[in-house]
Length: 589
Image 1 (cartoon, rainbow, N blue to C red):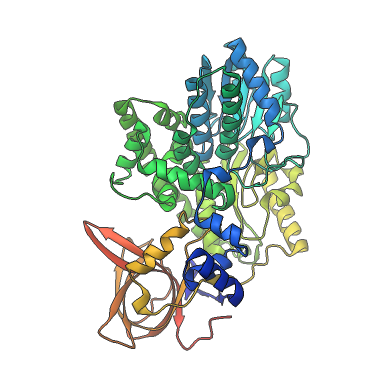
Image 2: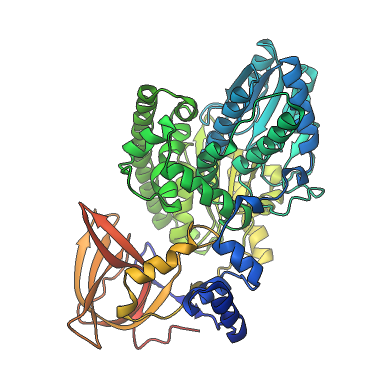
């Protein structure tokens, strides 16, 4: 029973795929894995023995040649010239985790390599907004800067880069956002989405693109003997954090980068990361996962750009002084607490607006605006709203007649392409298929809403199909043990594009239900009974449950992921519930 914010039950379709016998047997015999693990790989679209072997054993040797990136040769040439000339360089970054991590690794690498004058600039989300701006360019030029490198931005800054050229500032663009109709006239543009780019993996985060530039530049400087070699492994911690935080698929190149990045994090000597782990209450002997990056570390780093100054986070990662790092980490923690409170207030206001406006019931998209909202937090709230109401959500913070908003989509709907059809109502916009940012005048918001509704109505794109849950197999209560968790460990890192495996357990009795958490974010702790052996029971947790509670004594089928939970020194293996329904229901296709 999956429930929406209005306590109505939302039907989800459970699907369990058929495992091709021949392929399954090949995987089992050649890779020495179980049929259960083979089915999980096949469910992830891995239908080739070599691909399966690479998935199970990520290797840095499998990273593509960075020189396959269009534009990277020109970028390396210009940076090498800057090294010889001892030019002053500035890195223009972004205020989210991806941009912060990309800024940090590139600045640190250039400085360690021997570039004598390297500075950085990250715009204020609150006063300047995303991307390059003429004021920052002017300030850089007045300080004697002659070369700029953008990370996680720049592809949409045609006018700003044209202005930079008039000021004598060369610009190298490294970005991963969608390609606009008009490319900026930069010295070099590195973006895997360029048509001429031969790099095989198009799903890199901004920090992944920046890391490829570092790989290419390192090779050039090493081969020519211009600079001392710098070990790039030390930067994979931040590459992993930026990749996970920007919700890039953990497949292909990203799987390799994040796998080795997690190894670096788990043995980190970076003072800033040590301090960040401490404030997040992660112990030195804890094995950190991609989930920890997404839910414990990245929100703290992102909070700086949302609430305060993203430079706090950059300095956290650049400093070699633990005392300085501790102060920066505490500042991030304070920002994150403020962000949580603001997020809660905005979400409550959005829910109230939706409940009062009947027109939103039939609307294809939830598009709302308010001058009470914080522009740095509307993005994360729009994600919550889209998830809760299974509709695209765009929330706009208004100030002095100008709205700055963020939107999150539903599967199958490309928000950038949607806004391409509404550009006459917007001042600026950009982003990814599932997440966008925009600027719009307050008076144009009604017309923007109408245009979006018309586009979606004519295309039928926003008519959501029933949500589907892809099951990876059927388990019995006896299967939920440490052996299962050990077997599934090889699937790490788990996240977007490589989700946690989901299993079905049928005909389970509810023995006990305990409510946990606050009134607005209810968690339920279940005790389930094995109906084939009533002496056996196991624990299940359902986070953020909303809707009608099930009843003790009911018999239900469960969809869950198995996990080990450690609390105050005690560990237990339990099931993390995703969905459940009465065992008599026809729930599986």
